[in-house]
Image 1 (cartoon, rainbow, N blue to C red):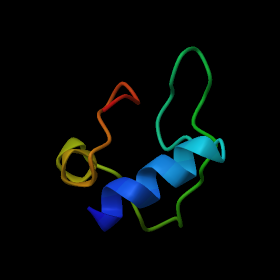
Image 2: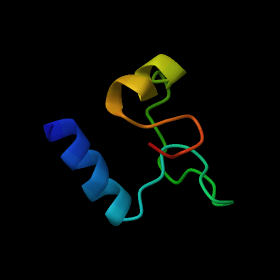
Image 3: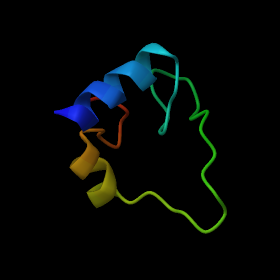
Image 4: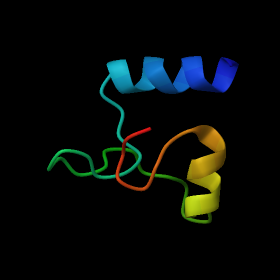
Length: 51
């Protein structure tokens, strides 16, 4: 529940981990960090940027 709330707050603040609605991702991860679809699924974020 906390992760979903945090995701919604980040979305409301304009954070995009993946491209969404024609807008590019605007979060840059550390060089050694990558996001995989399984990681996104676990956080409630889908590959197309929608839940």
